[in-house]
Image (cartoon, rainbow, N blue to C red; front, side):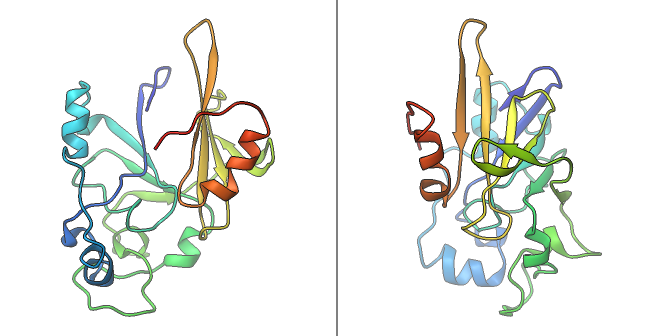
Length: 201
C-alpha cells in the first residue's frame, strides 16, 4: 500500500517462507517442513521491483498477528521498515527464542522481535488513541486522516488485527477490509451487514 501525503509504503503481513532459517527451531521442524510450506514464485522484493518500488522504500509493516505464515523477521528484506503488532502481543510472546536456540515450549515467539535486550528487529506494539469504529470497540486511525483504520480484532490470538483501507479516485470512494485467519468470523458479519461486499484472497 502507498499513502501519498506521507509518502509511506506499507505492507500488511509478509506471508510465509519455505526457508527454515527464517523461523525458530520449532516452527522450522514442525510447521515449515510438516506442511510443505512454499514461498511465492516471485519474492516480495521482486514483486515490488515490478511495480517500481524498492525494498528500501518500505517503512511500515503491520502484522495481523504473530503466526509463522504472517510474521517473520523483515530487516533483511526491508532494512528501513518498522514492524507493528497488536495489543497484547509482547505479553504473550516475549522473550521468545532465537532461531539457533533449541526448542523450548516456553518460548512461543521469535526473540528477534520480542527479546527485551537482544532483539534484532525494529518493531513495536501499536500505541496511540483507540476509539470505536463501527462494531469494533477499538480502532486506530493510523495516518490520522481516515485512510487506514487498524482494528483490534481479538479471537484468533492475542494481538490479532484487522484493518479498513479507505480509497478514492476523486469520483467514488471504496473501502477494503484486510483480515487474517479469524476474519471470517470476526469481521465478515459486521461488513456484510453494512452493505454489499466482494471477497478476494
